[in-house]
Length: 355
Ligand code: SAM
Ligand code: SF4
Figure 1 (spheres, rainbow, N blue to C red):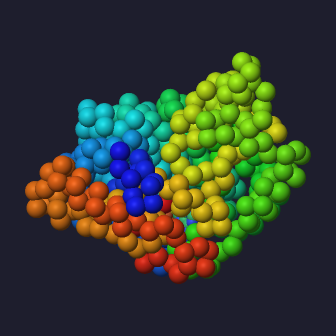
Figure 2 (figure 1 turned 30 degrees about the vertical axis):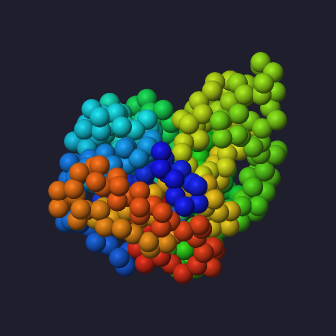
């Protein structure tokens, strides 16, 4: 187990496999910056040297991201090698879902446990604007439905709140929440493209959902139990827990809440939603993760440009043990917190970090 100088245990690594992406979401990778290819990718064996170091340091969870991680050309080989090693109790992926339809089952068999799929709108015209592409919504919906059929431990949907949502748009999302056994998470816009967008605040969003759903949102504990809910054994843990995106009586702690920072609520109709508001409701004090960029750098904070070169060490022939010693020292440079809602945009763009 490794801790930083602020006594935060690092147990979670987010690995951006590639900067390439087939979408141009305006809050992440606007049309004006659209390099489609990347030449300096790390090989699966190079990543294994790095990930072996994090395994030795006690990291328990790995998330693959990008760019679009399904565009990493050696994904199957990497997953297969990770499956042979069983280093991480949780291997998950964040994807835009457009290429998932035909691959979901095969990825699940290769040991991918969970997927988070980004979906900002279910109206085709709005979806096109949100992805900078036309006609991709059916492929993403096919990807989500394939993921649901593939047997992943959980399927979550990520929606970025880049502007206020009309009640009609919220209702159209709610219809899908009722239809799909997913957990739907709403993410506050982070100013990677400057202070360009402004979505609802936490309180505004909570109030809008409450009004449209016709009742209060019930907080869900990190272990999946609804706060204050009556249990069937009197200890308040096993009853009313969350499974398949709905409040049920099954305990599924990490598979529901994952290793991330979301605050979860059950809607009166049963589906569970997550709120992730890193700017206005910072979770820096409990930040348990670091990031690896596709050019082989260790990034200490999503919202700060503090990075350390690892790929040069790997290419000099350093072992996982040697890397682990180095990483342990670098982790002590993590700052206590980010600079808050008025911070300047980080130099490395979101599509080059992976969220
Ligand atoms: N391409 C994949 C996808 O879209 O899911 C993975 C990479 S993407 C950078 C990871 C997550 O970051 C997505 O859920 C995306 O919506 C979110 N994201 C991107 N830019 C953001 C921003 N400026 N503020 C908040 N979330 C953002
Ligand atoms: Fe690509 Fe994901 Fe960024 Fe959209 S959010 S541009 S899909 S990396």
